[in-house]
Length: 355
Image 1 (cartoon, rainbow, N blue to C red):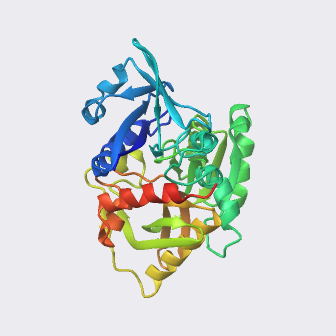
Image 2 (cartoon, rainbow, N blue to C red):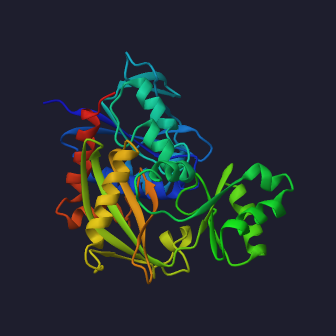
């Protein structure tokens, strides 16, 4: 039986470029090479699409010196990749795409739109779920109708912050929320641009920082409690939910540095929770995934609030990390699905997608 051609796309123009370059190595090693012929396409931080010659070139970063460009054609009839380099042009038929991209232009629906146009099956959520899941404000709007509790919030526009209207925006936040508060770019991932404010000056600094990362800023009530995550796979019609895991952040909050650079941050699989809370979180995760029209995979994050033990939804990640410390593959491994089976399941779901 001939092999199917799979294009694995990594890197990207987001602040999570480096994380993607780590995640893709885990995914690539788990792909069945007897079943698939793998082509690696790397997107530089500047947005250039390059053919990565090998997995080793991804590990050492030398893929960025590639002289061959590789782009997915939007032509739905051809379903192919176009290669161009010193030796001229060539094309290659692509049967399925596995994007291992985090953040802007990777999990926000933009590249998913290209895949849809190409009619090439692809792993992960579609355009709507990706776009809404990446945008924390619109995620909140969807979840508002589900009966799942969320933190109170205020939406601030970056244009108002940058136009010298900072004092009025701080007034708006203080009218609704008490300190401390979290300030988050609505569409930034891996906690880039996120800060915590304990007073007005820190709030203004945080708004200015977040404005560098997005046009919309979410300011939320601080939730003191345990950080609990849940993995989901399947489709809105057939949702499968893992057990839960807990984040023990080394820093005051689980920002980008604490997540990827601080060895003291830890993850705990199947933590002991108050009676009924594990199942409540699992049910809420499945409900949110379905409401977002999720497909393939997502990780849904919650807080278990201190003192009240209330389950409070935090965010959904439609293309969660696959690094050695990533919760998504660890949760499925604990459920009896190793990384090879998990990756193969995602590829098969791609072929089953209804357009």
